[in-house]
Image (tube, rainbow, N blue to C red; front, side):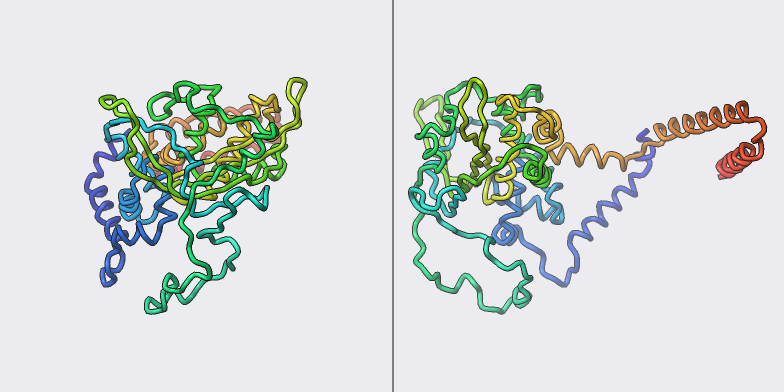
Length: 388
């Protein structure tokens, strides 16, 4: 099956050479530097880090450059590199309540402890192309003063805690509830626990999750979500080295977090209450974590006794198809030679057609003209293929 591929080594080498040329573009224009991608295409870098399951802005920027801006290919490159890294330690759960927030908004309460922080956002902007960006000599927007002094971020308690204290929302599971699954080392099995589902969704394709989250709002799921809280900022990462036995902070990372609030009508065992969907991702990936939270809530249907009647509630469908690395590999493998497979299909289709035409001739001998007409066409096609 792959003999033809081996025989085309020269063509493959030329393909790589031509791809390098496509990636470089006009050599009269200065080559794009990794630092420029890291600093000026930050949202793309954050998406690649999240779906690549590796927090390293420089490597993500390098992958984007190598992939010529193809983010799915960049995710593939980063995840492949990740598999070569040794696992030195397992970090403690990050405490997002202690996050130094740069952005924090809630659609459920206007006045929240710590206040709402609009922060950097494209919300409330006109979606019009800014042609001034064509001029590299324009006054830089970052030089303009802020209308209000920038405040240093401070830790803020979660908005959902307000509902939890009133007993209107379930208390989140403790971080000490047991061993957490690891989808990078264990085969996905069903039914999947929520920790496994969240891991899968965290590195799932943003577009896929966005579509599923959208479907839950359009009637394919009986939910009416509210954005309880969306926040973005820096959290500390800690490990407990075996030789020390106590927690050591090793650095900060930027994360985005979302908690969606959805009402639950209750059942014979439980009173009506609010449930939550959760999303967390590396960097500034607000849209991703919102979609993730919607899908997470939909996937809790089994535990809440809801009907599994829509795609977003089918965990096997969601978890098996959310990974863009696996999905693009399976789709793109169709480009590889399938000569033997296709020849088998070709023989099968020809045989089926011959059998059907023979049966038609036997059942309708008076309609020989039409049948013979088809047969003539068949014979003509066969002769052309043999001649080719």
